[in-house]
Length: 269
Image (spheres, rainbow, N blue to C red):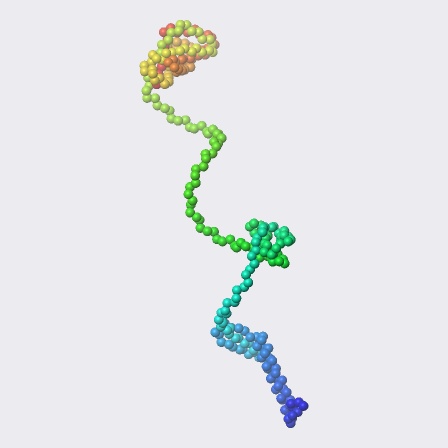
């Protein structure tokens, strides 16, 4: 028999009790639902709080805020793990498809390039990518001290001659401070000069005063034939113990000169 049938309950009492039990069950079920759905967590040390909001007739929302617990003590250190297996890098291949088909456990290959690669290790079943062995590039170190000076190298080969440079400006005129004057005599008899030709006569410049250091001639006059029309004295050339004078016939006719007792008056230095 049911619980209600053991007592003399009236129908009205039974209805009130059923309603009370039903509402009580709904309340506790609501508490369980809100506890698992709307509870928030506050920082450690803050107070717990609950906010109740009516959500219609005989219905409420419960918003719980619970503080975070303080951190517990650090646990004891666990036992060391098993030792890792050694491996040997056998070489560098450009791609995983180039890895050998019959490796042994512990074989490893770098896959990629010499500057960017990843290590593949054979674990007995498959090739395992264990990542690059090289870490990221570190910052640049400070500049080292200057080393000692090296030994002097051998001289290089002579280069080709460069092009001739432009002509420089004309220098100032030189100054002659030891100007001297003198005469050189000669007599060769009559001399003919054809039209347009020259006559060269040798002169002994040892007649000149202080002739041992004659360097050159500046001016000269030929006597007594200097007045002959059409004659041009080119210049006097200085040789070894002898000077030479060249006389040019600029006319269209041959000229005969009388060279007896003739002389050249010169200025020299």
